[in-house]
Image (cartoon, rainbow, N blue to C red; front, top):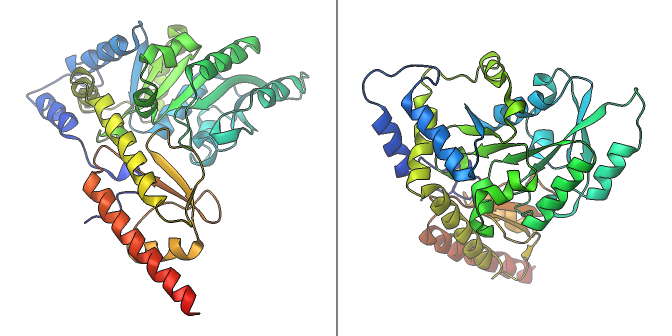
Length: 352
């Protein structure tokens, strides 16, 4: 079996519905650069999904989607406030600063990957002089980098916070579908009705081959965004292949079904991990990620046995991800081997 499965939801393949939609789009000659019926259908499907007349663009990946969206909200002397573990800060190689011509990213703390509102207020108000990069955008992540979720009440409070400080509100939604699946509310409630101005909506992690949607709920903010996409190499000539999977997954309900499945698998995986007394849950399992603390020797033994997962969040911490492709059999197989390896380590330690 493939032991890469828990490393990232990016490791999964293309789900059948996304593949079928691409196959259906792969017929005859079609206009390029988004001037086609598949792109139009995808935009309309997303407008229906969010129950509003939003403006929609498609990018190849999340880094481009986040960076271009944030750049469209700022000028070079502005600043973007985000959590100190946000993907736009830790994993995008300065792309936000690059595409915004140097906009400063200001970091705030917060429990469980969620921004501390008091820290945001302090960051905005600590200086108002011309020497300070003027705060312009608040960027949050849903689900967060630690697999936690902003509730509707929390999001509304964040929206009010942003409005009070005259900040535009951006949401990195690489795993937005997983948040929706858990909270079981209409997409509008977690976005524009809570004050979100622009969402970068992840498709790749949820079963698509490639492609993220940049959704502007405030259409005025989308002015000339198409030029940004073109300049950044994000305007696909055969746009229908980025757009068609959204049609297939939204019209067939697959987008939320995939997320529900991944979330359920994460809970099952957490149960397997917690069978080992030495393993402790670090963050609540609210989406498709499981964060645990485990002995370094157990981490090393699992990795030596070929199991791949990330340990970037601190000594003894490990992240396990589930996807639409994860199966219960996968989880049981992992659990069985985990118990065997843990028992072997315990026995060896006792002999010492």
